[in-house]
Length: 184
Image 1 (cartoon, rainbow, N blue to C red):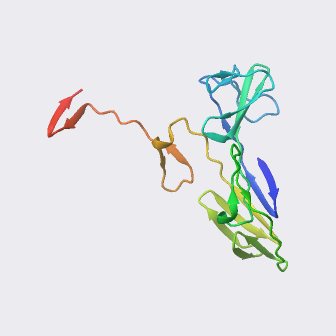
Image 2: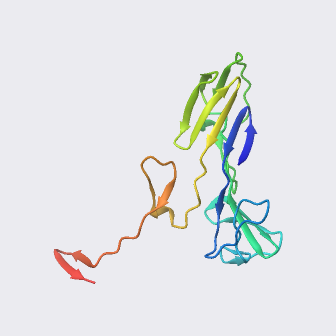
Image 3: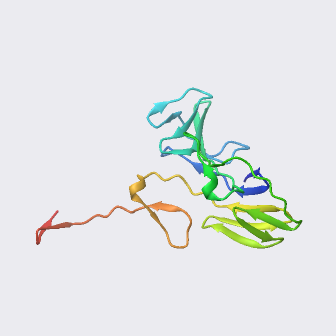
């Protein structure tokens, strides 16, 4: 479980492991993620202690430790500012709020984005995030979606899930073109 607190918003999320090898080793004592038996990722070999991020997903961070590589997907904290007031620095994983804002609310109220919530109110921030107002703190539980091993053009949404998944390849025994069918 990963817990962060940013600007009065407590975000709780499970660590999402990423295993970039075919035969992972079980997690080491005190660790939660399986490891790979070499320090190679994105086609590059890493030395002990070196860190890497996956191409195309700066939220997946890997570290070479004694000949094994351990990778996990970082969960971004829920931000108190509205999405229109956020930015992401080049190479960073998570958005940040532009500037700072100070608002004073009565006890028992929470401000998240542009909305105010009463104490003990539960609300869904997005498809992956459920929150509860606890006095003046928004406590949010966030699902972290696993890294996908397919190109973004082959990722599809699944009804009832906040995470995308890879499209299954379509295998056809025939092709149709110009009103004629060809067998493979």
